[in-house]
Length: 253
Ligand SMILES: NC(=O)c1ccc[n+]([C@@H]2O[C@H](COP(=O)([O-])OP(=O)(O)OC[C@H]3O[C@@H](n4cnc5c(N)ncnc54)[C@H](OP(=O)(O)O)[C@@H]3O)[C@@H](O)[C@H]2O)c1
Image (cartoon, rainbow, N blue to C red):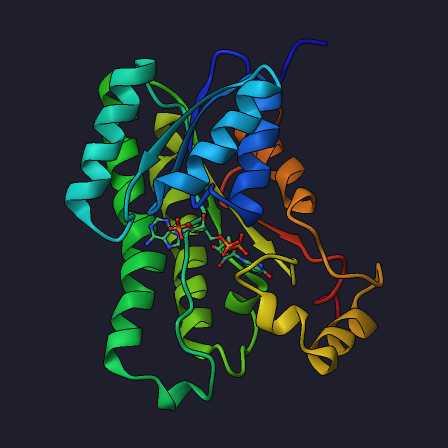
């Protein structure tokens, strides 16, 4: 069997660690040329070195996805490097406030929306423009969260941004389907990364989640990567507007 993403170019935001790193690694393994994006170049270089050592193709580009000029420059550099982009994984997100929803200050509110909503929307707009100019099909994958589908005490505004991402995914799937551009979301449960460190290392929270989780464990970044490859590949050619919940059965009921 050939590699599932041979000939494709993928941008993965937030790929210097955690879920984004796992997605980029798996996509490279499947033959995609991957563009690694986060704010700090050092982490990206290390991930690029690992991918290249395994025989993959990767280019690191530092970019704050909340800023339009930075997003645009990054996309131009990606296209200069590989000639095109076929796959976008919107994954870089932030959650600066941990506490009751109404106690958030406006600075943290703005930052959360700037990265998690405007960042995803802005990247999507740029990549869709590029695909439409090429009259090419494409796949966009938005990493949302189960926090966007249920109440999210202590991370309420973050949950709101993830609900916005799910809404955006569904509407754009309708609007872009006729052009052959598919857009799906992944809603991870609790995954062991730096982002979720406070939650994973809090014994009470961790065991509360694990107790309710059918598969009786917290997730690892690699648990998300296979789903992303499937959504990026032609195997999911008839799937759009979906929210793939990968949570070990945490939110089943
Ligand atoms: N871990 C979980 O339990 C969990 C659950 C549900 C959903 N998610 C979602 O999964 C995604 C990845 O999270 P993770 O757990 O893998 O987090 P992580 O390990 O903390 O990684 C976050 C990545 O995003 C980058 N990043 C942060 N702000 C950025 C910005 N403004 N511009 C560009 N890059 C930025 C970081 O690199 P730099 O610091 O270099 O910028 C890093 O590469 C997020 O969308 C998150 O909401 C996570």
